[in-house]
Image 1 (cartoon, rainbow, N blue to C red):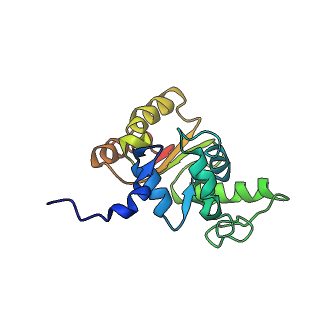
Image 2 (cartoon, rainbow, N blue to C red; image 1 turned 45 degrees about the horizontal axis):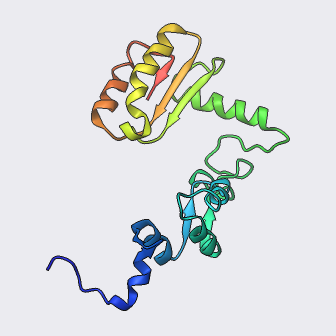
Length: 174
């Protein structure tokens, strides 16, 4: 009695290739289908572990959004969050000015290469690799690079990353 009543006349919604497939059900019942990029949306029409024809059927309600970023909102030519806006014509100068501002905010040297991570500090996102990788990169290239990490998630990972702050002051920040 934990399973809700189900009208058997709707059983076709549950089926895909003579099996119950919850992913297919979700795709069929969704108002919209999104993927991580327009390219991936095209790829799943040809290679999707047996769901290719379904993805072709729902193409009308599907959209690929490049890494979840709306390029109209986050256009560097008009993004109000940037210190200096830039376009393809002046991107080198614009990116350099933005890097300088970012480095000044985090007490990093803007003349050095800047490596950054922005994301969830979780094992499934690779966040658990960051403390060791950062320490290794900084110890082998000390004073030659900057690392800036922005994120939250697993408190253990956060603490490990924060423990590097004193050892690499001026080259590392979180």
